[in-house]
Image (cartoon, rainbow, N blue to C red; front, top):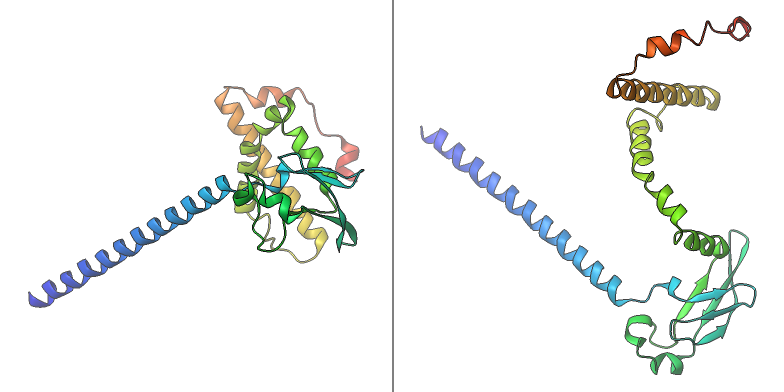
Length: 206
């Protein structure tokens, strides 16, 4: 009985230790998340600055404008750097939230794809984007299902065979979705498929 009691005591201590460790990790994650949210709220994001690629200028949220200079190339494409004067930034009420440098004013970088980013941000403000964005969760769930069923890890060697498995996998997932919708809406697929007729003989022999 003493052995059983000692073992029970060890198990209780182990469970308590694991529980405490789990709670500590949860509290640490919550603390880091809160710090990240606070930092995000207190900082001025780069997209708050209006960059004119044709004029090669950048205007900050307070209306100050500077001319850019070429930055290091990225993927063989040009980039631009826009540095605001330190004195201008220090006199700004947003200085503490905007500037991280100890020597210069705020520096804004425009990458080689800045034009595409500006176009995408403008589209995000449209009703068309809101309509399309509602479809994203369904699409991501379907992509997750494809990955779970082996989209990334095929069992064949060679790109053509790997692509063949991906196509079959996509067809299987689509059929599964079709059967689910038909069952939910009480649609008899046998009746619908019977009107399609037999498959083309020419396609079967090619």
